[in-house]
Image 1 (cartoon, rainbow, N blue to C red):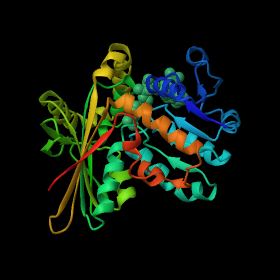
Image 2: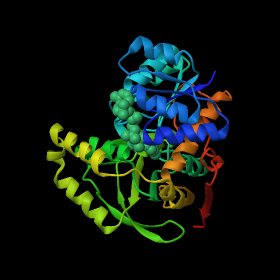
Image 3: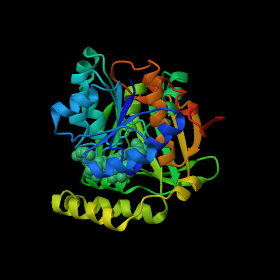
Length: 350
Ligand SMILES: NC(=O)c1ccc[n+]([C@@H]2O[C@H](COP(=O)([O-])OP(=O)(O)OC[C@H]3O[C@@H](n4cnc5c(N)ncnc54)[C@H](OP(=O)(O)O)[C@@H]3O)[C@@H](O)[C@H]2O)c1
């Protein structure tokens, strides 16, 4: 039995299908658009099944053919529920590439039922959150008394239409941080600081990244902030986004902005992905100020995502699929990120 890639004709779904074939896997491809699916299936010479997420019995029958699914159809706030519910019903392991906080929270709430059915629920097997989650777990294993975790990410190479549409989907929520174990609302781009990513120091701004849920689950650390490196114009867009929050909650405006993204923007090209890179910085601090810090460098974010997703599916095929809600590091250990081709970790002396 193999695994299913759902949303296989999306930008990232195609990259994952390509990586799977390069790795020697033979996944089944699926999605709701017959023409788009057939085109990708014939490019990679892989079998395919046309199925929509609301075709419950057909979806369950397709999931019955495989051991696991890599779910790539986002924004996941609309798609993770039906896919994960069907997986729990059919005993199929669920993996996805979401970075959306409400999705991580909703799947964590299904931990007990998934465990009973011996199904693994593993969201976030992309650049968001594999490298940050693995670094967080590594450092917290070394300092179990840590009370604060800070994570920062930098990426060059641009964003896909699907990622921007997912950002727009949640733009009205604003920022988040975790304090004393609680997830709290803060203004978008609440704090800035400087982070040394190894090649240079960059100004980073706080963002509502998936690790606010997943790193808390992986480490139990009660205070977590996540930052992204942004140029001055990006930081200005964050401040503008904060003042436009009430408008961004208006569904017609959301739909208009998402259509504009689909119409006007281009996905990152193969050359852009080839040139791009990612950098991650993670630091834990104990109550008396002691610190441990590590950094990681890797390929461009969508290449990173394709590699981690296929590596995760490979681990499941080899029999590693702990039941219930998991994070990348609880499922596969903190070295999972550095097992990915092109990823290097380094320590920073304190
Ligand atoms: N964690 C990470 O680091 C990471 C990395 C890459 C991407 N992502 C996330 O992955 C998602 C996809 O990104 P992308 O760049 O591949 O976007 P994309 O090119 O727009 O692809 C999205 C895919 O989802 C499908 N889809 C959307 N809603 C659906 C629904 N209700 N039922 C069935 N299929 C549906 C679309 O199919 P139709 O054309 O039929 O609508 C399309 O195939 C985004 O949410 C993005 O943020 C995360």
